[in-house]
Length: 531
Image (cartoon, rainbow, N blue to C red; front, side, top):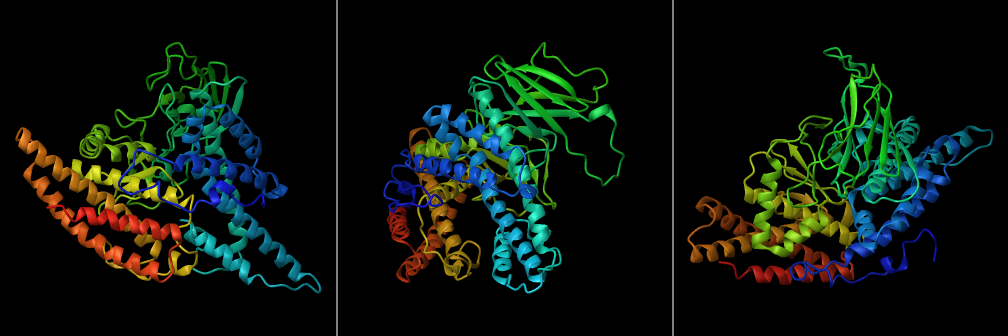
């Protein structure tokens, strides 16, 4: 087997029988497969980073990956698998794989251009340019790399420079995860990493915080926060110049964490599991030297949904470009916990599925925007919380979990036959969007809205049982909304399933994809008995 091929036990998976869409949600055989694939991808990425030419190399990346792999090997199997399938490692891998390939293609283009200019040189670059452009189109950075709306002579160089920066950013994020792992699960030997403050709306991270992964150890999910500015000098009003990047040297020795940053002095705190249970500095921790009063570092606990390990990020204002990360929203955690309670009471298996596949909720604030998730950030649900009822929030949490579940399934087995007809061509009518969509989008829509319909069916059944028992339950307006939406969803799903079955007859689905669609049809048939 070629070393660039995925592990055989993963690539050979052709069944989805254990991944039924309604029954057996409490059993999960996807995570071990994804964990094995994640380890293989980490090792492959490490080899590719190590083989980069000096001009394109990413400092600290290779030793950091060596440290991560050693840390993972020392963890208990369930903990290791949980980390490997989470958004921290898989998000890093998505970034690294994309920009390693973009850097490779840009270097190839630049080298061919030099060769072509040499006496007697020849050779075209069209197909390589097309591949690089297609790769960039799959990211959110097309406007940055193609600023005039067309590929020009500087395209390859811009892509190479930008790829180097994205790999550098991803490496800093990985360093924060390694520190978070070592704080949560103590291991022998010292650790010293350089971290960087950087706002990232995709991870719900404000500019004055370094998140140490989405994992929840003995002290919960942790972050390093910086209050104030070095030297205490306020930034002049109206300035457009961004704040300079701030770096932190974090050194862990035994049970002591030493944090140092220019202009913020030094802070020493006990490591996780030694009393750090509140989002403040531990009493007795040494603060910075005199003259560093303008900025203070602290190790703090991030907010979680009450009663769960799901991290709750600050609110992201996404109506601006670029999106901005704001502050935590007071009272949002209990609201989301109340929504999760609705799922638990009406459909316990689905509640366990939410807690299994959702690692973090990023609240977004943008009128008219629905909640969403991204394959490149598995396990992160972006939930529009403005004006949402508890039923709405319960629906959103489960809907995005269904997307995570299908993305996880697609990470272990092909459901669609590769080709532009399935991935790119807007060839199918989406009953939810009222527009043409590729087959991939139609499959996700039918799959996730089946979960919505099942939740609403169970909420109605729970309401009937409660009314018979005590006369109490949801307000009549909420029940009317659920009944109306269930009828609507059944019409939409029926339309989507007809198109999916047509795609199956046309040979656009793999055997695994056809089995999945048959399972969805059987599930939909059981919804038909709802009154």
